[in-house]
Amino acid sequence: MKEEGGAAAASRSPRIEMWILLADMDAYFASVEQLDHPHLRGRAVVVCGDPGRRGVVTAASYEARPSGVRAGMSLAEARRRCSGAEFVEGHPARYVALSLQLLDLYLSFTPDVEPFSVDEAFLGLDPKEATLEQATAVARRVQHAVDERFQLAVSVGVGPNKLVAKMAAGFGKPRGLTALDEEGFRRTFWPLEVQELWGVGPKLAGRMRSLGIMTVGDLAHAPIPSLKAAFGVVGPLLRETAWGRDDTPLVPCHQGVDPKSMGHEVTLSADSADPAFLEGTLLRLADQVARRLRSESFVGRSVTLRLRDEHFVTITRQRALEGYTDDHRLIFETARALWRAHWQGGALRLLGVSVSALERRGEHPQVELFEEDRRDDRLTQTLDRLRDRLGEAAVVPAGSLTHRRALSHVPFGTRPGRGREDAK
Image (cartoon, rainbow, N blue to C red; front, side, top):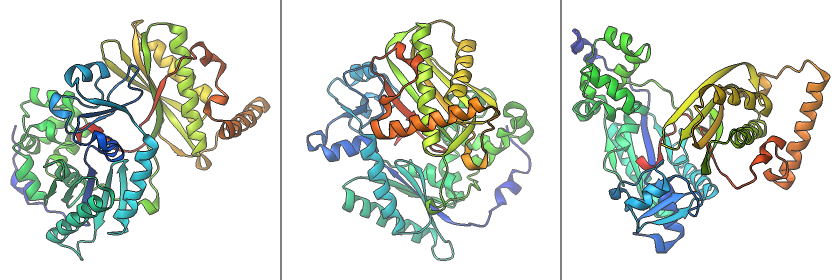
């Protein structure tokens, strides 16, 4: 698929607003465990929840990856593939604390630092003060500083925008350093399979291949009308991405970056098709999500349900609300309605509930029409204060008490563009 006028499109060279560096920690969770526990260094390490229970891989060290272990894989499969690996429980609080220290280090190089995930951050350099070569030199200094201060490895990508920097950071891991302008991006990525493009997953890549779009270069030269017909408004945007163009601004952390969604998911200790147990689990998840929304002063107006069955088939369904909320009852009722509409009765191994389209609570107050609503709100505030003092387990919804067995709750969806840690 070729488009006439491609040369004119290629000649377009937007003014560089900022040189972007993406600092991407290598196998971050596993590397931190190896740092904190010297006996793990040089060994295959798999980070998970409780290693003694069912669950999934959170991260794998580079020593474990040749066996095919990756994030999202069941622990049983990971053990089959890499029987000699050390399976260790993750320590999220430690990873977050260290991530904040890394941000402080990055701020010593530039005030323009935007956290992208717990193990990634964008750094911006003024092009009036730095060439691509000088930005690359800064990237080398960042790598040296991270190694010297934390004894951890980081890969850095350098480019004229976030897209190019992100994709460049994936080259040569671990400890990779790749700098590309737009022309270098096209020279490097156009020959590669279209799935190598950031934002193109396996399903989307399969649809593109059915249209004859095999490489990133094919996508760059695909006719815009054909892309619109096949993929809607996202089609032309993907084509721009294939050219290495991205106008997403860098938002420094000192300006604040609000989350796009908040959620919790749970891998059940055993596959279950018990409606009462599953409904109780949804209630507990909705309560956790609502509690987190309130604690961070957010409300949302879109509820998402995530289900994974015993065959590892995952479905995600979403429903918009009429207004904004942080009420666990409304979140639960919406998630339950989605569950009842889409659950086929088979055994499930994972459930997740999240709320998106977030806004600060003061900007979108919830309407309380009746005195009963105001009483409920006061009661919720009292219970939140009780949890703050005594812990999350001090008060739980009565409907969730049908399953007091321990569950592995994992927060998800807190950052825009969050990627899989095992790909690092």
